[in-house]
Picture 1 (cartoon, chains in turn red, brown, cyan):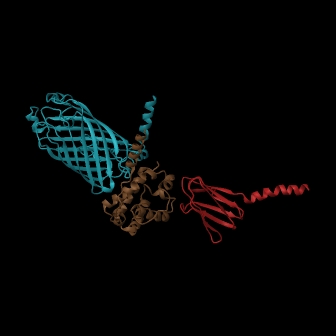
Picture 2 (cartoon, chains in turn purple, blue, brown):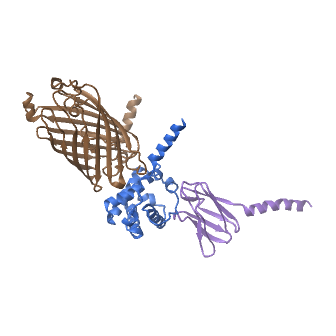
Length: 103
Length: 139
Length: 290
């Protein structure tokens, strides 16, 4: 009985970890961090802490998205549903790159 | 007191009213083809100008050329809609000075010269661009 | 070391650094927007003051220039040389030396042929509001106030002709507006003065010895980035009993080779000067600057 109770207590924690959103900060026309490892199904929240308008896109054969532009102070969240390594870019600032490893 | 407030408000509106007349500036600049040629020539000048070229080092130049072609069309009174962001929002992070702004104007003047736009016409166009200094220059 | 001495040493040391000097003399204003030097040395046209601050320094820097002017009239000649500096597109300081050669009139007046009056003129101008170039979306002109303090060296002669003083200060309020869409620059100023012949013949007189309000103005058309033509008018008081003094006007052309050199030529009518009427002739001025 005790073992079952313990299992029930651990389960919500595990479920919470599976949905946890990682935060990527856009600042100085760069992504911080510049590289991240996540699990398939997890999402990244991009926070614009910069003095510039940004947007994000990925253009790969297995996975793609193209977001709206976001003003300083705004957020956008993107879920990565496909495993692989992807480069998140900004169409306003071509030098911005975030490498996302999705397991 | 109310009368004084009314007069002050009217006076300040009068002092800030736009002076542009609706005229044929768009045609005088060669329509959209003329404006496209001007934007390409001026952007080439910006990128070759040691005073300001670094300002564009992180920018998507194809995107900027396209937006300028739209924006110049609107400013010249052409049949376009500018769908970009405000001058303030797009330039805020660059901390531009009057010297930066004036260097860009000089490069634009040189491009207008190379596009054979008459001086008087150049000034009509610049008169509409000049007030952008208020939103673009933050430093 | 006293704090002031320490601060000055630091400033001189900084100014001597080439990079700092480059940044300070930013040469960032558009061509011709510093004006040339008017006859008392301030930034402006030939006769009339403008509200523009001399030099090519933007509000983040400074600009400086030297000028030399010669005016050749039927019976007199006038030479002027000076320096002006524009600080942060806000404050202008100027110095001009003026020599007024009476030539043959000097002999006629018993002073001796080629008798010359000299003046030192110290000027300051402060921009109050507006920007003549950028404010194309507003009726507000660029407005500045200023003063010109003038000292003459011929006190005795000035007294003999009825002048009340050989030192005087003019105060002025000036406004400038560039109607860029019309390629037109318009300037106007009100000047409080007691000066006789711009101060060459002293200040105040036996006929009138108080400040009076005078007007000066100009309009110029921009033919190209480098070439401007226009006209100026300047009214003057008539304080001396022995001469009637009227307004002066000119038609001018200014050529700006680049941000370092400009040449202004004008046909000027300075009206009556001392005992000779119809003093109209050539005005030539050269400005060189950083």
